Image (cartoon, rainbow, N blue to C red; front, side, top):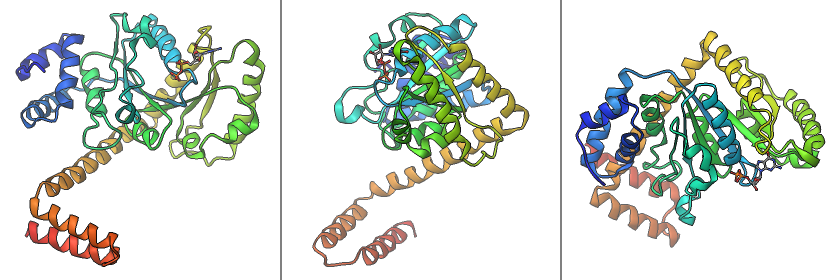
Length: 329
Ligand code: GDP
C-alpha cells in the first residue's frame, strides 16, 4: 500500500477524485498504527464539513436480485443527476474468501460510469469487529461528493442490524412468493425495514408479486407504528425490465422529507453516532486489555479450568474482572 500525506487525501476528496477516494478507504481499513493516525486526522477534518447525502441500506437473500437492482437503480439515479457510491458489508467474505461485490462484472455498467463508485468489500471488513470500517467509508464517499450511498449486505446473521445502524433508509428486497414464503421472512427484519421491494415483478411472476404486496401490507398492518411516524411501504419492481425504480426513489424521497421535517432524520444520525462511539470505545478497551500479556495468561488458565469443570463460569468471571481491575488500578 502506497502512503501519502493528509493533504493528499483531503485535496483528493475535495476534487472528487475516485482513485484518491479508494486510497483513503484503504487507509482507514489499514490496521497499522501509523495509518490509523492519518486516518483519524482525515476523518476528523471531513466531519467538520459533512455534506448532506442519503444513505440507503439494501438487504436480501442471495439471488433475490440485489446487484441487478443496484445496477439499474444506480443508473436511474445518475440519470436524475445524482452521484452514487456502492459499498458492501459482507459477513461471508472471511469464510469463503469471496465477497458479494468482489465480482465487479455483477455491476458492470454502473462500475464503468464516472458518476458511480463501487467498492468491493475488503477481506478484512469482517462483520462487526474492530476491522469493520464501512461507516468511515460512507463518510469518505460523502466527502468525495456522492449524494446517494448504497450499503449492500446479504441477509445473514447480524449484518442487517449492523447496516441498519449506519444508514438513513433500510430497504429489504424479496421475491414474489406465497404466503408461506412471506412468513419465512424474519419479523425483526420486516420491522426494521423502511421499505420492502418485491423484485422480479415481471413475466409469469407479475401476478404473484401483486398478491405478495397485498399479503405483505396486511401483515405489516399488525406491526406497531414506529416512533418516527413512518410506516413501512411496499413497492414492486423489476430490475431486469427496469420497472419500478421511480416508485422506489419516490418512496425514499418521501421518507427523507418526512423524517427531515419531524426531526427524525438528524436524530437518527445522531443516535447512530452515539452507538458507534460507544461500540468503538468498548472494542478499544477490549483490544487494549487483550494486549496485556498477564491478562491473556489468566484468561487462558480460567478457560481451561472451565473446560475441566474446575470452576464455575460466574466465579471465573469474577476472578477475571478482579485481574482486570488490578491492571487498571
Ligand atoms: P443478488 O445475489 O441478490 O445480488 O442477485 P442478482 O442480482 O445476482 O440476481 C440473481 C438472479 O436473478 C440473476 O440470474 C438475475 O438475472 C435474476 N434477476 C435479477 N433481477 C431480476 C428481475 O427483476 N426479474 C427477473 N426475472 N430476474 C431477475
